[in-house]
Length: 339
Ligand code: ZN
Image 1 (cartoon, rainbow, N blue to C red):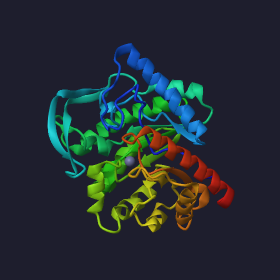
Image 2: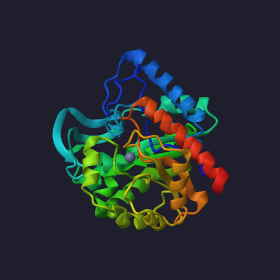
Image 3: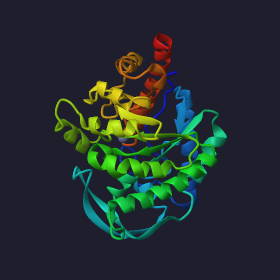
């Protein structure tokens, strides 16, 4: 009970990439970079195991950004045709590449680190992939009829990689959909159907991470504008509850999402964000237990998996590791007190 896991990334070591950045430049190139990425994957697993994390992740040492790191493996995308686009309903401006032809996977995306991670841990292993709606919101469409057709095309590629990851021995595959809280009508109409395409034929556990974003300044400003209660999820939780996705990852620590909304997720597992990624203050084990206790009013204990609110990629590495340890200690204390 209360098995701990991460929503996503940890910061990359400074010998691998520039520290404290969301889009860091690699420190190495060619075969040296490939070897360093392998080393970072092993280190990430060891750090998570030592912190008491039950379901460990690859933590993304191998990709610069969670969306564009996937797109680099996709043919049909012209990275030389970059256009400025307002993404997440114009919350950020980003220079995004253009879909210029039919999309297809050039080769496996995460085979190396999946097999390496699987060979080096006996714990359950989780991999994350960007969700189709979030990809569509992070790229310019210069080929497909509309966003729905584009999302379904990407969902097919994600399904191809997800099936291969499951065959590599990955236990949980999570699709990251931060776009879900800004396109609430579209989530019902095509966001969830696209996720269903992603998980077709998958025997492993499936999850979706929805969130209000990393703890970077743009997001903090945006969150401050959302008012005292964030009720965006009220519109999409019933649709997620009716979906075939088994787990939903959501930020709850210091979040203004009313905790009672978790009841709308019905029988889904909840990857409960108990670690705030927008502050450097380290949670205590008691803080973690307090968030779990609040959630237990709406979600049964066996469906709660203590987790981080979001990825920790842009944080200072020592802070992120201290938060990782707090997560492990908090989950252990919750098992003692509440299990
Ligand atoms: Zn997130």
